[in-house]
Image (cartoon, rainbow, N blue to C red; front, side):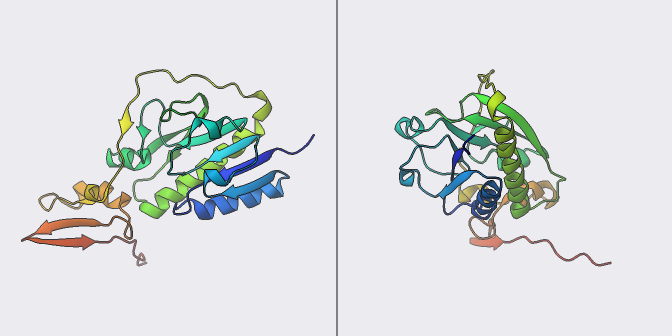
Length: 218
């Protein structure tokens, strides 16, 4: 049996890139024909599977139709939580058990048929990079699960009323100076020190806050 031809598509500016490299290398070790892409227009050939992971651009039907499967892993219990950065929004809601859905992409917004679901378990202390690391590792686990069960998979339609998360913007990192750190700790967990740091306004000035884990003293 010939090995599957697989493309991994992610955005070059995505935090997933190092994990995409690891994923591609492991796929190659397991005997798959695999290539990594950062723009869907660069994928000239047809592939049995395109894993679309942390890719920030809209993909048209013409591209999707070229390939047998276009697989996305989304951080919510679809159809609930369609849209942008669902894991961050759910952490902001106080959740530490975050569902993941692996589904077949189409032209709609996260509304394709679902192959299976799983979940990430956070402990409530993880900061942005740790949150993303656990997400990336579980995403790759789900992709391998898809491959391991490839010949027997039966996707199902999404059922229920969909909900949507909006795209987060820098303004969403604003702290309320009248609330405690404890009350706003989940917001501090999800901010990016480089891209969208926490900030607040006081006496006519804007102040930035960056958060890191310190070394625990014994």
